[in-house]
Image (cartoon, rainbow, N blue to C red; front, side, top):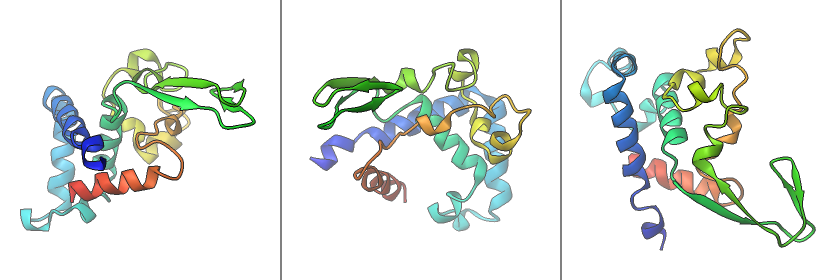
Length: 165
């Protein structure tokens, strides 16, 4: 069941990222320079080192934001006693749905819709997040939970990274 559930997610996200890089020559150029400056030979390139590249990490995070692993709606059921979802209290047992692609583009969460719908890996770079004058400073990046939240999120994220290794 695990293989069926996640069999095409990596390919879908990598296909989306490849498309964005192929159509955005400036982003592709930065990505290529980032890799070429980090490694002296092809033999040195392996996932442990690549994962430490800030720009590569930003490209992956932006790709996951724009090409989420779950392209549709995630159903949720409020626990007994109720809970708060997006600032609204819901009683226990109520079913709710979350449309990940739309949430990840929301203007009040991610820059402006004009920029929220665009491939901008810079929004994930620490210097942009911390810079008060950056157009990405107020982005609510924690809303992008590609691997979900809760006890199963780390397991799924670990499987995804393992598949890339």
